[in-house]
Length: 249
Ligand code: F6R
Image (cartoon, rainbow, N blue to C red):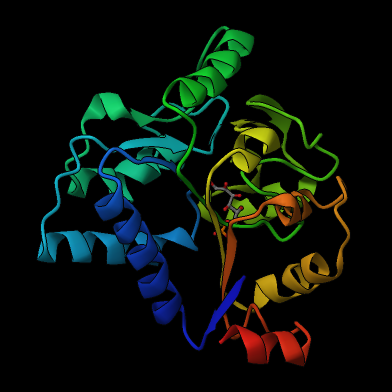
């Protein structure tokens, strides 16, 4: 299902409300979370909602999608740091319920395996929030990633390193590798919300719309999912066929 809004603000309200509804309906929900620019206003809105009408978050569990290899939790560009800045510092989720892949682990294989297993042990993800890369990646699952992948190490594509270079003072500082939840982990979530905003996402959203299910385009795996919502602003939806735009509003 597509939901298309005029502004980023409306996208953020809608998405934050969906997260809130999930937590209210299921206080012990297991949420899969994403980082990136797209999620900043979503998390800001979610915090506002919760500050306005406090909720018990003591039973909530979160698993983040990914983390750069080589960056500590204190590094301002690490996803761990991002999550505390943009969400966790403002919400009362017990620390032991918050999970991010460890980018500094010395046993990467064991870390990856344990991460996917921890998700399964908690009964799987009730809702996975996703952004999308301009090359169609979800999490850091780059083009050609197997759709049956579990948490694994990826070499970041040149495109992703260029896109994410905006967060670093020097392009050379962008890590070359990351740990990411696999596509199978994502597909097993009971519900998936993919959010894309801004004109730099218009090409990939049109490509995704027209693409068959194909490992060249990781996000196309989501076409197999039976509870997917794609939330876009006008700019990201600009190249979708007119009839989709009309029925999605
Ligand atoms: C981040 C993640 C990535 C981003 C994607 C879009 O945890 O998993 O897939 O969602 O790169 O990033 P932004 O929102 O910065 O355009």
